[in-house]
Every structure is written in structure tokens, then in C-alpha cells.
Image (cartoon, rainbow, N blue to C red; front, side, top):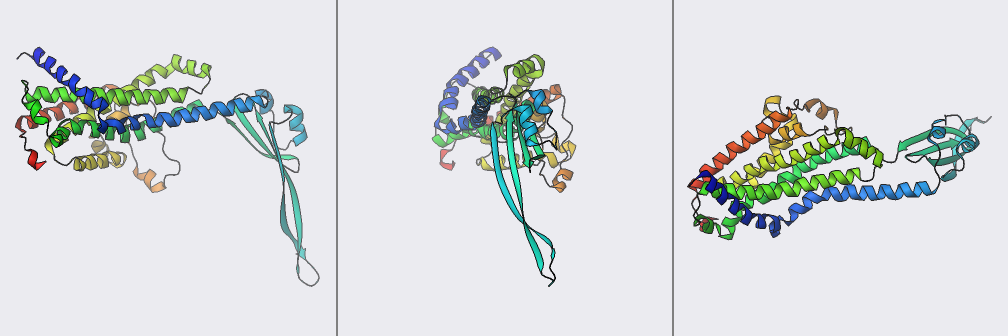
Length: 370
């Protein structure tokens, strides 16, 4: 049979298997993994829109006037500059203070009463809170209601820590492990082996089906999450981002998600052929990828995660509350160039699929042992 005919056979097998990969009850939870972060970002966007509208309805001050407020000003001076506050809260605190001792050596106490006031303003994008004690400005807090750079950093963390390490990993485990192992458990694999197609062609067709399904689900999920992150921000900010690095960032996130399915998919497909218990390779690989940042540089480059993170346009932020000892031990290797990352993942995938092809040639069906 010619290679062209074999490719047509593989694609025919893939189209049949895709229906099961997309609509199988076993794969339903994969959709939940892919869409879960989008729900969070959409909820954040709705909350931000509601708060933005509420603050605007209470009045907007000029940004220059807001920046002119300095510590030490009185509450009346602030009101004269900015007008009536959108929120005006007052309360009184009482505190006992020792004032000395009387003639008999007994302690003398005096109750000190302090009047506090908080004024809140909004300039269209920033929320400002001013705290006064006895009418004097003692503290202030001015921050963006929606911080574009901060949200981009949050998305980078969600993509690298959730999508790459968990969602795509376990999604590929569920999809690709079932391609052969699931049919063995259902006692239907022999029907495929009776078809007039070489086993390597069957392997390729099943891999293509799993790859298309996982790539569509997780790439679409990541892009939907990315769109949900951009949605609440001002059109001018989003337009400037698209004109700058936005398209490049979007492409690299989508490429990383797809190549994650390529790499993890081949590993779990081979594991389903070579090992009877899928839990063992999953735990080993998950542990290896989880400790990746703590390994020497050479060992870090032997993981799928290293090359996927090299494709990400924004590095994931680290937890500021991380213990000092972990920060000392954590030493991520320098990222590979995009071309090296792509070629490296494709080379590893080709090697794993070759090993899987050798295994499927020798596979003997014995349902009684499954």
C-alpha cells in the first residue's frame, strides 16, 4: 500500500474515533477542565463592570485633581478640591492612655477619643480612599479598578500553572489513555485489528483523533479565557495591545496549548499500550513535571513542561509569600528559543510514537487479563 493510501486510511480512522473523543461520556470532565478558568475570568469581568458602573453613577472627579491630594490636608480642603465624596464614613475610637501616677502612687488613666473619617472618590479608572484622623489626612490608597498588566500576569499564571500543569496533562491522560486501553476494557479492540489496515496506521489514526479533540478543546478553552480576561478593559487599552504584541502573545499561548496536547498525548498513548495500569505513568510524569523548577538545568530540559513554558510570552509570577528556602532552591532554567522548543517537542513526540508503533505491532489481545 502506498503512503498516500495509508494516510487516507489513518484519516478515516481518525474521523470515526473523533466522535468518541469529542462526545464520549468519559470525556465530559475534560470540557469542565478546559472551561473552568474562563468562568472565573467572566465572573471577574462582570463584577468589575458592575462596580465600574456603580462608581460612575456616584460621580467622577478629574484625575489631575485626585493627584493633587497630599498628606496633611484637612477633610474640608479635600472636599473643596474634589467635591462631595461618593462614600463618606465616620466613626469614633476610644483608647485608654496612662497619664502618670497620683500622690498615692496609683496609675492615672485618661480616655482618648479620636474621630476618624473616610472619603472615597473615583476618576473613571482609579478608586481612591482617604483616611482622616481629627480632620487631618493620615493615609490614602489610590489604585486602578482594572489593571491591564496585572490581569495579563494573572492569565499567565493561570495558563502555566493550571492549563499546562493540570488541565492539559489530565485531559490528555483521559483522552489518549482511552484510545487503546479503553477499547480493551470495553472488549472492542479486536474489531479494529480485523480491519484491513496496518496496526501502525491504526495507531496514527487514533492519535490524530485524540490530538484534534484535545487541541480543539484546550486551545479553544485557553483562547476563551484570554478573551474573557480582555473583555472588561477599556477598548483603547485592548486596541493598543492588539496593535502591539497582542496577536503574537495570542498565537504563542495557542501554540503552547496545542503542543502540550501533542507531547502529553503521545506519552499517554504509548503508556496505554505498554502499561496495564495508567496511574503509575501518570503519577511519575506528574511528579517529574511538578519538581521541574527544582532540578538542575540539564534535567529540566528533559520534560515537556520546560519547552511549553519556553513558548509562553509572559513568565508566570512567583508567589511573594513563598518561603525563602524554596526561593533559594527554585532555579528555572533559561527558556529555550521558540524554534528549539517546537522542534524539541516534535522530536520527542516522534520518538515516543515510534516506540508506540513497535508496541502495537506486538500487541496481543487477551481480554481475560484486562
